[in-house]
Image 1: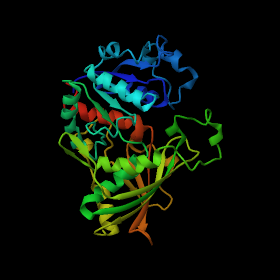
Image 2: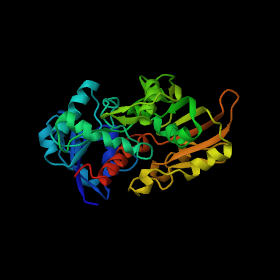
Image 3: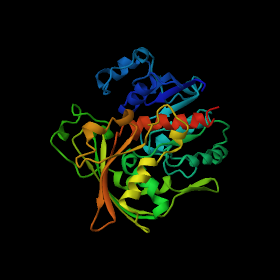
Image 4: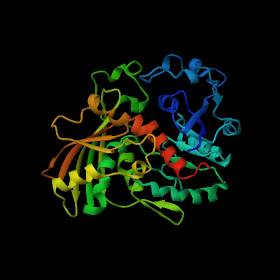
Amino acid sequence: MKQYQVGVVGATGMVGQRFVSLLAQHPWFHLAVVAASPRSAGKTYEEAVGSRWAMPDPMPEQVKNMVVLDASHVEEVASKVDFVFCAVDMKKEEIRALEESYAKAECPVVSNNSAHRFTPDVPMVVPEINPEHLDVIAAQRARLGTKKGFVAVKSNCSLQSYVPALHPLKDEFGLSKVLVCTYQAISGAGKTFATWPEMVDNCIPYIGGEEEKSEQEPLKLWGKVEGGAIVPTTSPSITAQCLRIPVTDGHMAAVFMSFEKKPSKEEILDRWANFEGEAQRLALPSAPKHFLHYFEENDRPQTKLDRNLENGMAVSIGRLRPDTQYDYKFVCLSHNTLRGAAGGGVLLAELLAAKGYFD
């Protein structure tokens, strides 16, 4: 695979920092540009981030002295890279405009933001679930008038725990109804306990917009490309509650599910054990060897023990059992800033690179 020159737009925030960390030693992608708001522009990356570095590992040496560019200087950034990752903190309409500006400058965008997730011709892709949605990029390029530029997005971080577990069961057994309660880490809000002391010994039963995303985004992931747009599916019906809990990283979900053709527990476990997606078939650098891991122990998965499974890119599942109201229930876990955010973005970029979309 050729080496691609890449940029991170929004590089000083928590997800941007995670992108920087993941790209430091990436075999395909060379970090050439870090860009952020005008208040950070002109400073070195180390100066711009300062004491806000929130990653568990030290800031990579090769990025410390990189000069931060102004993210709004689209042509300047685009001229230096083959594509950018975008993780900015702005109003949605501003994000949509910024990302399309990069695309129109013939600079593809792999976005962690939610602003374009429901734009009909923007693929929202989990590589193991719906890689075929990349086909819609041709229609998006026609709309934007570009040859190379486009926007592709990853889905919400909370979906990454439970949707992968439901996916291998959905079509074969007719998944009809899902209830999910997510228990989400504070890093999902871009916070640490140092910056959000109110979360210590606390649980907040509301995360703005999160329940709507949890109910609607899976339907787009499971939709189809038709007439130059992604048409969401209408089933299963999904209802969700999302809570913020006092853990640093890792989103857990309690899931209840019913089927048109109820499988046996053994059939479910078999589908989980043997599932692989396009990311595994292509052996993408960031892909977990096994996407779905089932734990037999009654007290697993646990956030602290299991969130970093396969470099934080695998999904952990446990406690599958019959339910009195639904057919089955289980719990699952994923690392929200790795599989759920920057890591999922890097994996999506690897899929795009492998399929030639950056060339």
